[in-house]
Amino acid sequence: MQIPLYENTILEEEKKAIYDVVESGQMSFGPKCLEFEEVFAKKLNVRNAVFVNSGSSANLLAFFALANPTLSLPSGQRRMTPGSEVIVPAVTWSTTIWPIIQAGAIPVLVDSDPLTLQMKPEAVEKAISAKTVGICAVHVLGNSCDMDRLNDIAATNQLWLMEDTCESLGGKWDGTFLGTTGIAGTYSFFFSHHITTIEGGMIVTPDDDFAELLRSMRAHGWTRHLKNKEKVEAQYSEFDPRFLFINTGFNVRPTEINAAIGLIQIEKLQKFNERRVQIAEHWNKEFFSLIQSGDILPNTSTQKASPVFFGYSAICKNTEIRNRFKNALDDAGIETRHIICGNMARQPAFQHFEHRVSGSLDGADKIMDCGIYWGANPGLSDDQVQYVTKVVKGFFNG
Ligand SMILES: Cc1ncc(COP(=O)(O)O)c(C=O)c1O
Image (cartoon, rainbow, N blue to C red):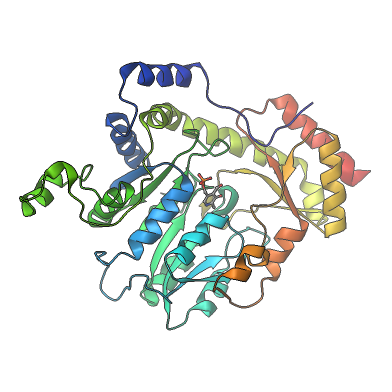
């Protein structure tokens, strides 16, 4: 039996939608993208959603908007300028951190908890310096950071809080969707994520002005897809309104094909996530004695989280056992991978760029050296779930 990490969820309905877009002739950014933004914002109960071509682009745009001179923040909060510090967890994906460096700021890496895989609030608190302007919370593998503590720390220290939610779409903290409490939340619709648009990403924000800044920066600094386009154009009547640039920017626009897939997939999100949770909870029960004995430490929910397991992760007692476990799963046809990029501070790219490590990264090292995960895809059959159970128990119980 083969248990893949990811499974294709693009089925007949999505294929037809792709075909219809191609037939229509309107393939670049247009009404379907705007409709997807509206539906997504409504689902997550947030004022604005800005659709882009990947989760990495969502982070890129959000951070560059947080560094933009036209940004307006609540009083006391500061935008990113060269030399500013932004606190991030050591266990995250590369493109949570690269845009901070690319914008001229300094990422400050803090430790993550091997029990929950999330950044440690006490490490965040200790990392704050006079240069700190913001915190980027990252909700790892479907679980949630402790948002009570992080919101508190941000408010007390007048920092903005951004939420990289690329791995936790649909997850909640205390009943509120992850990604919706800070200045911005970002999501990824890459092939392996909770829903897919093949490639794609979204930024949500409660702040209308921030959303407008993102819309302009998404398309060259252009006014074309601004909500208040007419008002802005009226201020510059000497320009051809079709080619009016009010900022710098990128081209990170998605296509109508991505949006058409997204409109179908977003309606399946709840069902997909329910199945992910059902599979992970089943394994938690089946592996109870392995968890009790410390053979495996699964991704354990932070206390007010409703997680939406991205995969099923296990931290083993040591690296030697993890490596043998990985080989056993490989041999049994169960695809695995390490937990995101491990401890990012150990990645060679950091040799070339200014950054700061705050405190010990022992937890992140443990996650990197002893952790592994396999798929908890909604498409797994009960037989496949049972098969994984048997292989895992067989390895540890001999
Ligand atoms: C935490 C996190 N942030 C950002 C991204 C980037 O998303 P994308 O692959 O859509 O660029 C990922 C991708 O998996 C991720 O896991």
